[in-house]
Length: 161
Length: 256
Image (tube, rainbow over all chains, first blue to last red; front, side, top):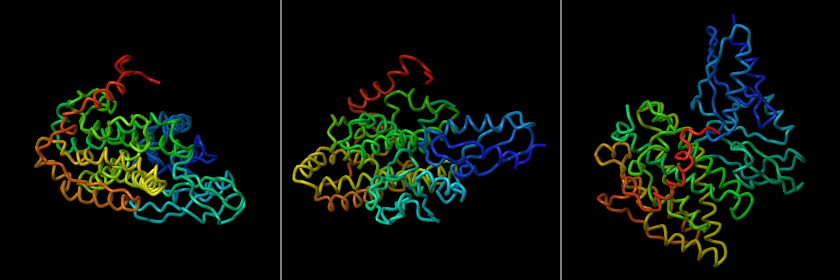
């Protein structure tokens, strides 16, 4: 009998293709329905335009499908609740920080007034708060580019949504 | 159900209006990938094109499920007259950054107001999708507004170029508010008031323009005026559509 825990454990081994964290650590898994041989995994996209989504979908099929007692798995993409960086686990935050990517705590801000952090995000390299937003569009859809005036390094910050 | 059933549905017409704007905008503006003025903006412009195409897909997909069609077919297999985009979107920019930017800013500001309204309608699937798009669209509007201000209040030359772009596009901009459906009555329910939405758009645009030392007269075109949203497209739309669907016509159902 396959349990939800088995499936969550398998999902925690599915990596984000562009960051050193799993999709569970990133907060992309909303719900697992483990009943029967065909479990359903409910996933939330970080950004609608994220090109990694088909890759993640393929990896989830492969990894969950390999669990003994699972015939195949169904993936359901959901838009609610919306993904925010608040969904990233503490382990995920620590791994991202090691990778030089900082993460905000957002709370329930009005989505129309996106609280793009424009300054004072502690630099992941030198710790200085003399930092500023360089561009809201970074290497992937979920990351913005910031610049540290103290150590003159660029770093990435997860966008608030 | 068929494509024609979808085209008769008033709500579908409203959704297509935004999805088609985004499809054509995302397609056209990706021409700038590799050519935008600075590296950061090259990434930003490309990201916004990528967003626009995925937002279009999210909306096409909602219609696809509802009408038993495929999102790709809705995107690429309609007759030219069934596209509901505004022809402002497909005006060629001839690699003039001021034109490209001004056009994108006008459209993005309009779209933000549109999805905002769709996010509250009594249709949970569509409303959820639009709620997801709101924060992504807000970043576009903010980024584009900053560019308008930066260039408008920059040097004499950047101000002149932006004012020229504004003068060229402002008269056509109110065609964004053309109701896409023949039966205006039913459309109004989903538009939540064309005049009210125009006033909101106008005051947002004017606020940014003032900060940018730019000026324009933005007036709402008469209801009776028929343009792209009702299928009476300009020639530049036809050439963009032909270019966009070229691969698909050469090789039906291509896979990458």
